[in-house]
Length: 108
Image (cartoon, rainbow, N blue to C red; front, top):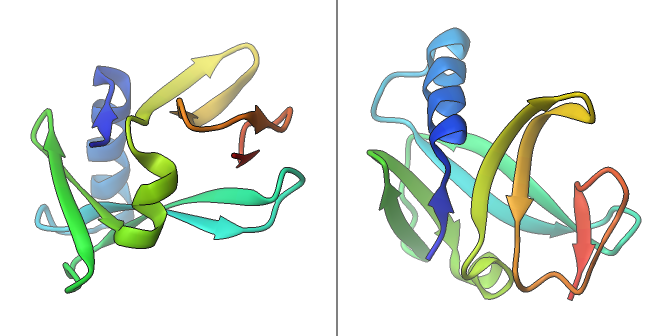
């Protein structure tokens, strides 16, 4: 399961509206190869649920994750920070053995 914080929920709703996506577009979270630690998070909006997607809903936001990415993301919380250390979405991933300094890549 993947959850989101209240700050992340508010930011997702605001960003979806700003980008002009309709309310039925969901958040897609995936993991791709790359980055300084080997794996990178990818976050986007998607209007389609694929056959191999797992769908989670938290705080009224639907989160789509392909099954391969889910292996790396189980138990992850999506948060949003607007503090002094940078502004953006953060993945609090209990499966990550190591993360890079920017927080955009990880390894297991």
